[in-house]
Image 1 (spheres, rainbow, N blue to C red):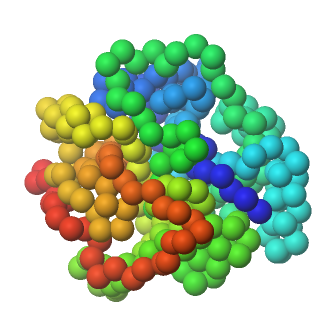
Image 2: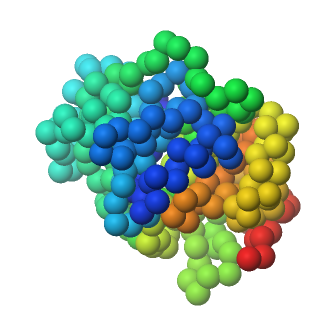
Length: 289
């Protein structure tokens, strides 16, 4: 199948009511709130790029992976079932929540929740966020997400062989954990990686998600806002794989967001997967509490 990008993320939150103000004031996003408290965040013409659902935990609820249309979606569902995956298409409520025409729910071999979807709702009016940053989306999708994969090899092959992702890079071992942390970076378009698999579990179901903006000025202004509000998790730094300049933010409920710019784009036809000896060139030191 052909996944064309990360379309949206669904996050369960114990502090859902704090997300609209945080998104507007810190990230320059527009928001709407449904009657049940579900928050839809906009960064571009799509009605929902991040959906925040009120709940009893702070965790990833779904990764929305986009295909080009209903025919491609039907073929993707058939391919998933042929590969032995348990797929649900009884998902009208989830599609309304995500502002898409249709979706199928499936989990990868490590249990990460995926929604294969088509038909995002487009809002014809401008995004109401004066002075907000310009997010780099379009053909590159929303950004990337890093999820735990305790069945790393099996999960890696599922993304490559069933979902059609390309292998970009590997980092191992990384950081000072009791067990070595292996990261596999996977892409489905020109963005260096859309999904990264981490070999260790995480109670929130994802290590972080990343949003890219157009300019270093947008990054600097967001950094200053987070510094003033005490929401910085790290200082600025530059990763070795996508070479993006970024920092990490503490979102409501403790969800981690990487906010950056200047990530490289790849030619899928000529890219050769690499093994890197470190996650970054410099920076990303933790901010003291």
